[in-house]
Image (cartoon, rainbow, N blue to C red; front, top):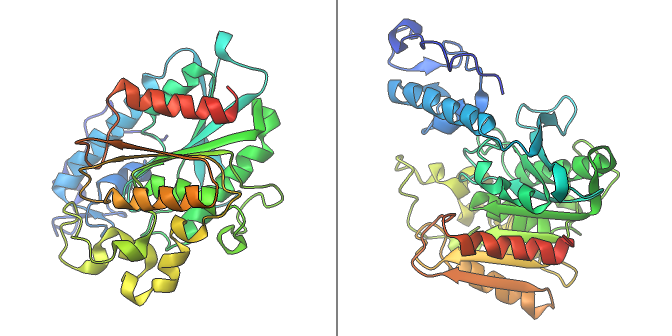
Amino acid sequence: LAISSIHAEPISFADLDENHDGKLSEEEFSAPNKDAFDQVDDNIDRCLSEKEYKAYFSFEERLLQERENLPANIKAYYDLPYVEGGHYRHKLDLYLPTGEVAEKTLPLVIWIHGGGWRKGTKGTILRQLYLVEHGFAVASINYRLSHHAKFPAQIYDCKAAIRFLREKAAEYGIDPDRFGVWGSSAGGHLVALVGTSGDVKNLEGKLGVTDVSSRVQAVCDWFGPTDFVQMEGRPPNPNIKSTDPLMQPVPRLLGGLVSDNKRLARQASPASHVSHDDPPFLIMHGDSDRLVPVQQSEVFHDLLTKVGVESELIIIPGAGHGFFKKPEELEAVTKFFKNHLGR
């Protein structure tokens, strides 16, 4: 994480805005941390307004603090490239337990962040690292966002990261046969797709390591969309300021409206690939979610169970789009991965 400005007084917005157009291009502001730039560029115009410029330093500070607050019993490997010579987003962080909880070979849980496929970073991981204290290795991956590349780039990246970690398993003391994935929102979609598309060759990609499997042994999906066709016609995401429907998260991911891209929408939907040999699932969803309706998880759970896949659905009363506060929520995740990854 290249952070050059945290402990120094930032250069004023006016001084950087050389052409006085009220925004900073990437050339005017050479952001040392592209993850932070992506996170605060709300309208995805590859420029920063004065408000976004201030938010950049706040978010950059958060990423630095997450690393500084890493528990002493965790060993971290940052910014491992999982595609040699790849995109700047083709990197992951790996966290390993030390001391008494560490086994000779560790089960691994891979966290895939959310953010509407348009923002988010592997760096915001501190809360998920409680799993390390239970003896799991934890990886957090970046993938190309929707302004970098359209689907299926995102699933190609996730599977490339899984294959990289499986190839490097012995080097880091990880058991290649005990891999789980966990994600929320857009990350929930991607982990669900990883879980159901283990036998789908055209969603594998050819990035990085290609001679090992990308299959996983357990999936925890937190409120991820699972059928884009069924979501068509939903109210727009209120976090997107633009009135252009093509600026909404799913059209940006697919490169157009679902109605104009139904074949790709089906290909991108985890529900389209459900089969009897999929790994066990834990699905958690709030019944007051206004962005991804809880019915997405209910129908998906039913599809899994009908073909004989072990699936547990936990609906959290009163929860909206996002939860990570109550001990029982984390306990359910811990129990699930312990049961299915043998910890």
